[in-house]
Image 1: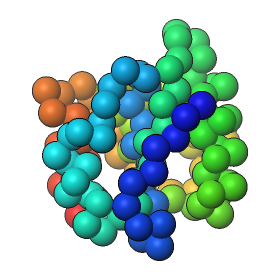
Image 2: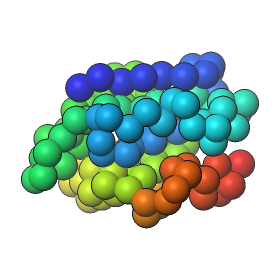
Image 3: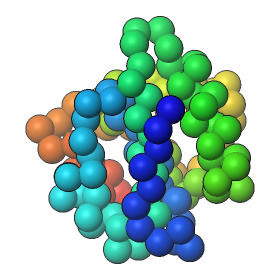
Length: 116
């Protein structure tokens, strides 16, 4: 699985899971808002139906290795909520905030308001 990291690694980590590889959340202006205060991590699971658990395991391993097992915020966007649910329920990822957002014309719109 590929991971894109944006922003200063010294800032609190925000994990944004969309669930679709082809979604380019980096271009989203909401990401730019988050970058002012957070280290944004975007996994690209490129998953198919029923693969949320294996994607969650890969993400959990990454969070353990690169974030000391802790996140400031875990955000599930659109189909990413399934992976986020696995991270919380099965892998018990430690996160101060959890935000689940349904599909929107502008992904991340709610997240940027709630985190800041």
